Structure formats: structure tokens, C-alpha cells
Image (cartoon, rainbow, N blue to C red):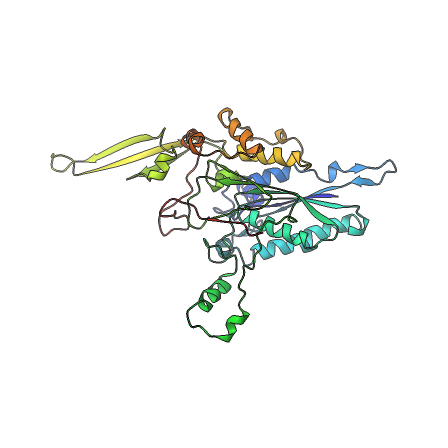
Length: 396
């Protein structure tokens, strides 16, 4: 048996998107007024029950199943849970999502085929975006520990892993309470004996090891600068990790499919200028004269017109790498709206062959296609003061 498991990103839920677009819900914003991610698209073309093959005697020889798990902070048809979205824990957090997969989804599949004992083998392919990629890594490690008999992970496909569990933005992947207790117990001269009960390690194991999966492929965002979206790298390990121009959503594919305009007032961040973001921007100057004299104030506005399609490059690259590893995807052309623009096909090719696209090669892509995910300071999308993303290394 072969099973595909797909963990979507925080506040990504393709079921809620479909309800919103068809007018079947009163919920708005969050996971509803959103876009299907690359994880949701790949789930749609993963082989399923209809693709099962049979032996000459008529019994099933090779079975295919797939599982889609909506993103942290979401439940199909229900309001989004902002606390779970912020911390990664709670009613729709990582532990709940993993429990659903192990205790409901996988058990339902095994029961359908008369239990794991009836299987010659159980091969699992896992994909995830954002915190869904983090969840996919935890899931793969639990499989490696023997959580499901006879199961092994063949392919682990990751779109820009962001852990940020507990207190967002740091490298301690534990609940908020545990992180506060850890900080308290590190205070000088703290002799509280209860500190012996506080875990010293993360409670969420994202680390990629030799037995985590046969093949690990990780695509990361070169233009993500938000404080609460640090990268949980898969290196050092056996993983192939590549960087592409784009923000977090550009890699995950959960971005607008039509042209958008992004407006910037005031001084431009040098990092973004150097990355080519404003090479094709329109500059508008508005002056405010006073009493007919020389202007005392002027406002400079830059408008970027962002073209659609960048999310399709990592989608095709992941598809290509997975297919080469034996993952049973159907034809990607069965999906609509996934064509790669002509000037991004080189990006797709580079990612597929394990090459990052950075430096001068990234500039024309940034100027035309890359979205800005950052927001104002003191918001959930505030950027790093130096526009340098925090990267936390893998610890195999």
C-alpha cells in the first residue's frame, strides 16, 4: 500500500476556500478568503482508490490512498482559531492534527484493507507547507520510531518549513507555558526544585535524521523577512535544500493568481532595493505647497505591479522531484492554473535539479513576481529590523 499525507500551512484550508468561493459560508477572512496552497494541489493529483491495481486472481495488488490535513488554526466549516494559529498548539494545533492522522485517518484506511497485517508493505509519502512542513517532519519521525507497523517514509517534500511553536519566532519548539518555565529556570541563582520537572528540550521534534525518510526535498524562501517566520532548515542532513526568490507564500503557492499592486510610501528598505524589488516600480511624487511658496512636504510613493505565477515554479519542482523518487502522482496538467510562466521555467529547472537561485539570477524574478509578506512594526507580520531572516539549523 502507498499513502500520501499532506499537511497544509497555518490558516490554509482548501475546504474553507471552496466554501467561501461558492458562497456556502458566512465566514470571511483567514482560511476562507485565501488561496489553495501547493500542498492542496499536490494532494488533488496523488493516486487514490480509483487507481488501485488488481492481481490476476482479482484481489487488490497495489493500493493507493491519500490524506489531506487542513492547516493549524483551521477546521473545515468552523471559525479559525487564532490562538492555535499564533502558537501552533491548542484545539486545532499540531498535536490535534497528528492525533487525527494517526488515530482516525490511518486507522480508517487500514480497516478498509483488513488491517496492517494484510499488507506486504506500507509506503508513505509526506508533504507540508509552513507549520504543515514542520508537522510533516514530526510525523515522519514518529513513523520512523515505529508508530505504524511496517510503515516507512519514502519521500518527504517540504515547502519553507516554519516551526515557530509556542512563543512565535524563536527556536524553542515548545508550548508557551513550557517556554516561560524554561526561561524562569535559567535565571541566575534559581534553585527552585520544580525546575527539575521542566523539559530542557523542545517538545516538537522537527529534526531530520537519516531514518526520517529515504528522500527529503526542501524548498525555502529567499525573500521572507518577517520576525515570526524563521526558517527551520533541514540542513545539515541528507536533505536536498534549495532557496528560491520569493516570500513564504510564494513558495507555498498560497498567493493571488491575478496581478496585484503593492504600494510603498516613504524611504525604501535598501535590502529590497538591492534585491531588485523596485526595478520596474512606478514612482509617484505628491507635493504639498503652503501659501503658494515652495513645497514644505512631499510624499514619494512606489507602486509595484506583481505578476502571477511564481508559486507554480516550486509546485512543478516538487512534483518533478517526487515523481523521480517513485511518488505516484497523476499528470500535473490535470490541474488548472498551474502553468509556469516562460521566464520562470529556468527557476523550475534549477530547483528540480537541486540548485538554488540567488544573487544576480534572482533579481529579475524579484522585480516582476515576488510578493511582499511584511507588515508594519508591532503587527503579526512585522519584519526583522535588518531584513535578515533567522535560520535555525537542523540537529540530527
